Image (cartoon, rainbow, N blue to C red; front, side, top):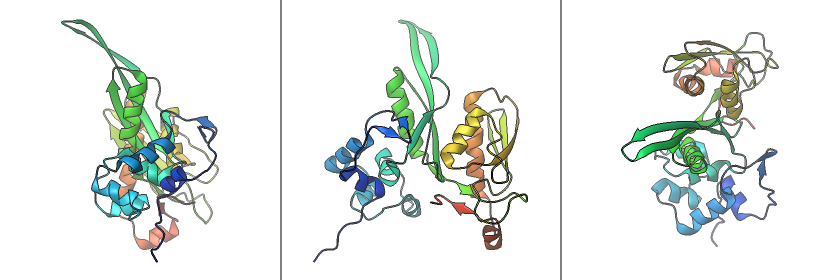
Amino acid sequence: MSQPVTLAPGLAWALGHIEDDGTQGGQRRRGPDPRITLREWMTNGARTRLGRMVANGEITTFEQAVASRLPIREPEIIDAFFQPNLFVEMIGRPRRIQRMTDSGQRTRFNVMVVVGNKDGVVGLATSKGKEVATTIQKATNQAKLNMITVRRGNGSWESGGGPGRSVPMKITGRAGSTRITLMPAPTGKGLVIGETGRMILEMAGITDVWSSSKGQTRTQYNFARSTFNALKQANLARISRADVERLHISRGGMS
């Protein structure tokens, strides 16, 4: 007798019969319905080796996908792991880019999108295109392919014991002339950072942080990239097992 196949949470959700009102966390969903997209992806067949392994139930979590060392080249793979708890936000407004060519004026749009599950995973990307809606969808798909797990911990000396949702150490990220430094904050302090950085950190599931900034911080896209790069730097730091236990450091989801 064959064993039942265990699917990734998003695939189980897509194939289930759960009522869906088209919203996520009280917000209207952007773009196509991910449930329909996932069903079509499974019906038509994944295009990559990793995608086929996810569709067949051989890989069911993002951590397993990263450990496989196979490149993630299909946004549906990310949907399979995190839907319906995957959130999308656009950074600022679409930027209009106008150029004069031999055939006349040419208008394109530049869009930045952040994607996350608000529990330790976040992605960021920009895209250019002729139409706003299709450009947002392109940026969303690319942000899913850029997803990273985030190290969180209780790195502030002011905090008591137990898990924390701050950064575990002082970390710095750069983009262009902008430099953002994130520092551990005690539980309940909130996100002491600009609105753009707050959007990135909220998507990553970080709730408490101190910050400082240098350079052209009014450049919204560079501010977002600097914050995202700081989170990436935390993953590169070497931390002893004793510090992991002392600072209650986790990587990825906590719930």
